[in-house]
Length: 126
Image 1 (cartoon, helix red, strand yellow):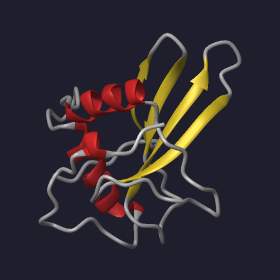
Image 2 (cartoon, rainbow, N blue to C red; image 1 turned 180 degrees about the vertical axis):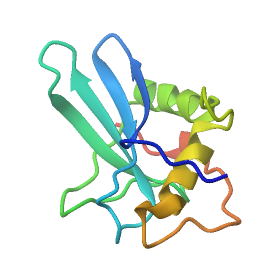
Image 3 (tube, rainbow, N blue to C red; image 1 turned 180 degrees about the horizontal axis):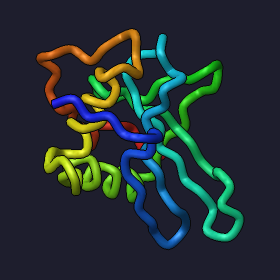
Image 4 (tube, helix red, strand yellow; image 1 turned 60 degrees about the vertical axis):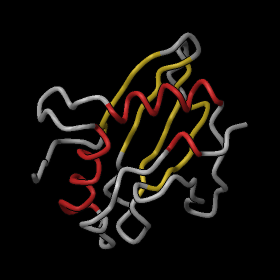
């Protein structure tokens, strides 16, 4: 499938502490295939946490000279559930949708055709 959408917001959900956004950014053309996990304060709507996670393996990555932060375990559990949910419009898992968005023109480095969904539960948490 080849999905193209306005903007880069892939998934958004809320917990008791923040709004959470999963984003694929189109300015990351030379980077390894990855997504941004961003937490926004309920009151100010300002970013309070961000990290970057690879699409091809369960690893954090540094981004634009910033070290990746580790997710809390509860955040990771919610993220994993979200990545496995079906996209409401395209009826494929959110992770698969992100891979297709990346390969559809965001990155000069594409996700391998034979990539298998990584075990994100193996990510180190804080």
